[in-house]
Length: 233
Length: 267
Image (cartoon, rainbow over all chains, first blue to last red):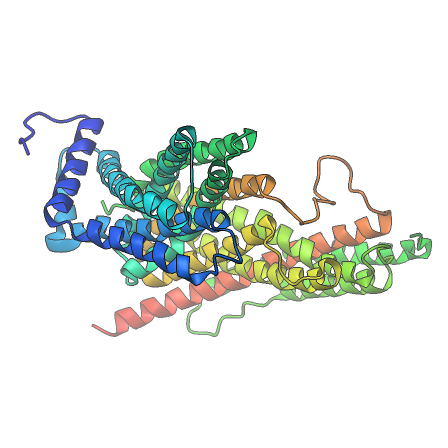
């Protein structure tokens, strides 16, 4: 951690904050281990929750993947701003001579890398348990869907995490307000995954990817602009 | 489907709704002094409310007795005179007002706007609940199932859940100003979410009837039905305004009592 002498720009400040969060995570590894173990356990539990001879594994795998994505994502987001409550660390972030948008983007970037890290464990676990065979082009398409979905989850999730920690319900509030916003994300990602895993990517996949991209553009912009309003002045 | 003898009744129905539309002007001149009277019990239900109830009553008499029965769905279609206007009121009046006053709140910082947003959320929740109850009641005889995995149903259910989350969050924030800012941010993001839920609806397979009344081309239904629908929309809009005003007055009274309690306690 090199001390920043001159005033960093928005991107520089965001990267500094993201690096700080990731370094804390890298040194403790508490949250990542919890989320990764949760993902593998959930994949295993879902495998035994249905009779694989009654429902084909290929029909289950996309749903299982995106349900795990949703809940492990919420697990990650809960501690994003919760960690800043200790010793009112958030106050130090807010008095820093950087824009509030940079604080939000930095937090969101750290969350994005965290969620993608969890997905790197989740996707192979699901592919393994459900015996999905995919071509390399299908793997590339799925990777694209995963990144787009993670950006969508992280944009609204980071903002709501910042709000939820300041309420009486704290982490209990996050799923209540964030889950409805994940409906378009999870629906699009799951439908695209059905087509990609089934080996029939056509124009249908593009429709879902376009919807995901539009969601990402709108909500990254809206949440970045909305974040300063949630900060006490 | 030709019940031409109903034209006269249509006139009466429209007359009833017209009287209702005239009521707010008469009513609003009366109560401004009552708004800030925390000592007396609030009287939220005025003449406007009872006019709205009467308009809803007239609508249903007309819908049940003087509007032709739909050829394919039979009497089950009658529930649309409740379902469609409730959905219209919830979406285009309650939630639109909630989103607009939330945007204005972040700009003007007037606590009145926050109160309007909170009250329309609550009234909108009531109307959405009506939509979610009448929908399955219609679907059972016509689709043969109470609930389908249909996207539009799911979207409405999630909208209902968003409003519940919004109200839960309001309960969880003590500070009035912070609560107003958080609520406005959540309401604005929910407003942005609605088009995405609709896009998801169109991409996902859908069983729900396509819009019949509010569509680009002319409504495809006989004139008697169209009049009853128009009447139902007017009656529901009126009921919405009346309930919103009632809820707003209760909110004012509750805040006044809170302040009275707060200043009475520590001092």
